[in-house]
Image 1 (spheres, rainbow, N blue to C red):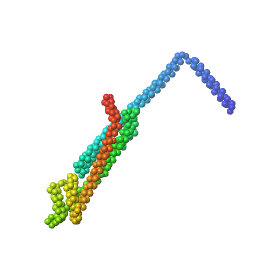
Image 2: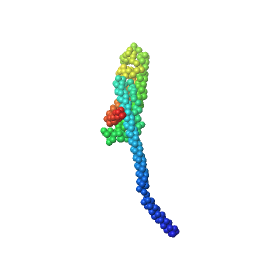
Image 3: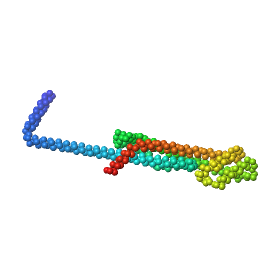
Length: 329
């Protein structure tokens, strides 16, 4: 085994020595022209490699520029869309404000006219709060507003929009819950008035003034006068105006006339009159709370809206400048 290894080592040394000798012989045997040709070939190969590398670099740079431009365009489009959504949301809040103002005026004129909230579909407001990826819009603003230019904080702007959406949704939800209850309370009061009138008319038909004496006669005459006033100038008993004036024309006069009377037929009128009054008070209390809640939410919305306009002012300027550049390009 040792002889084999020694033989291999000897052969390897001879091979390397002979190869170097031949290479040295080859190099010294090359002519000047051949050297120039070889150097030219190497230079051409090197130049080709450099050009190839430059082309690759140039292509990568151009692609990177295209990617950057595409990202910039995408971010600009996002901010434009956000700007649209915010301004479109203003319409929703304005419709709510006008509806609340109308509800307040309607309540003052006649509380039995149940208000209806005319709404501008809150698609944009809901989109900001629940549909768009707010993180993407935040990152777009960071790139388009470097170093928080002009104090623009899209995070605060988005939070305010979320708060506005929450309040608007809450306000409409509360009103939607109360609306059928208002109708129910109103119908109960109307039915109580109809029953009261029916009881009073039955009392008048069952009695004759000539058969009565003393306080009974006085009460009969007074009750007849109350009903006579309604018959001589009959209101629309199905309308809202009647519900408004019924307290002054019917309930209060009957209560004042019968509050000290204990006779069964008169007590029945008095009890029904008191029942109608209780239903009226219940409805008035509910409609007052509804309108007051609408006004409170309107005030909150207007406060948030003012803050949105203040915080979002740099975005407004940015979009205007962006639109100018597009027109001029």
